[in-house]
Length: 355
Image (cartoon, rainbow, N blue to C red; front, side, top):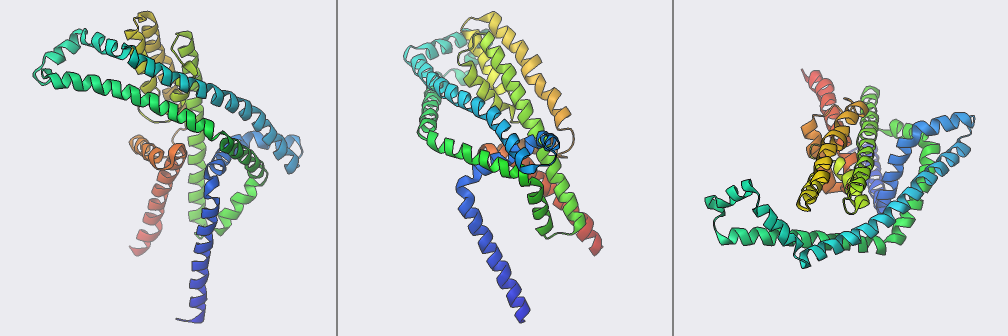
């Protein structure tokens, strides 16, 4: 082994170690860094207009853009967190009261009165007593679990409010630097990436297109659906409308199932509360407004920029949610998109050269 090779290997090992140590040091701030990148990227077109107004005085423009984001995000976040904590606690209390008062059992009895349910129950597989008791216990245990989970989430959110506040201000602080120095950071990462110029252009173009499409398509669509759903829930007298609007926002980010996983159970709830007109209206509004928004907005906002099969995107987002939490909704499409780009590069540049 020559001296130059030894120096190269040592430098590579040292670089990898320092990179790992840097990531380890920054790991407690993963979420504020990630959301700062997402928000700065989403607001960057607006920031460019502000830069033009301030005649390219980047510090002042970045400060004004960050202040504008803070004035938009902070009041909404404070109001939503406060309202959601209250409604989550109310949801837990509602679940406990429903179990204690026998309302859950009454719903089960009403289900038994439905003709097609009776036909299923009269079939051979449902004749045994343990099936009836098991389903009833499962329904009660599920409700109790949901209530306990809701209370635990609210308790954790309340206990960690100080951490949330600190992370929020770290995020705002980082947004300023990402807006001001975003182009410089992008160019630096582009320059140090050890790939050919052609490959770098392809990879970074796909990264930018995918990230932009996911933010516009997923976030904007989910937000519009959640706002529409919240208004509909409130007008139809659905309990805890803000809470269920928040759940609709999260559900809307998941392909295929989407917001229907929230409004369909609410239709059933209104039906068993004998609010038949409200149940019918919610069903129609769910089909032709809430869920239809997904089919209308996503093709316009996302288009074919991600270049991913819809089934693979669906599985990727579900896996991303499990591995990375909420960040996985944005990271999974980027990772999958990069995978296909790298496969394409491998086919074109490496296999073709061998042939």
